[in-house]
Image (cartoon, rainbow, N blue to C red; front, top):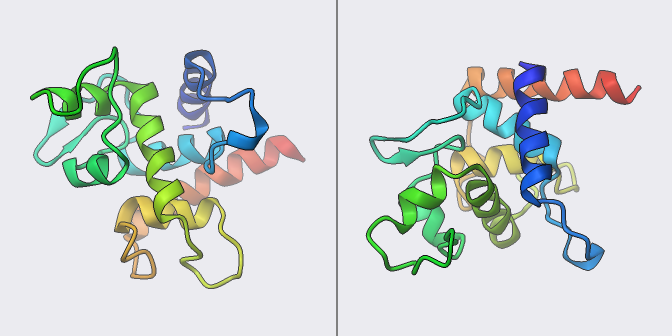
Length: 154
């Protein structure tokens, strides 16, 4: 699991998710994005659209729209394939998550801090339902991922 998240984080770094302007730092760290990805989809490269969700982050059309409809290669957000082409692209999908969290970031667990655990809940439950019960397996995989990276920081 750690190697998949490390590869994903490296991919995001190479793709330029890290911003040079510190005033525009993304709300979600690369490790947090990687652990959300691991929890939601196993972070399997090449995931396409299945049912109502697409890509590594299993993003719905509504989530993408709430995130401002980011696109790749200058594609119009109104193009028929704008949603699917963005959400299956790792960089654009990560940007979608960042935009969504900028809009809906909040303290979901009532601990007085908005952090990765809140972003994990928001990603799964949405910006208006993040205080609800989360699936055990989703939280378990997420926590295992976070714990692996916490060991590296020690």
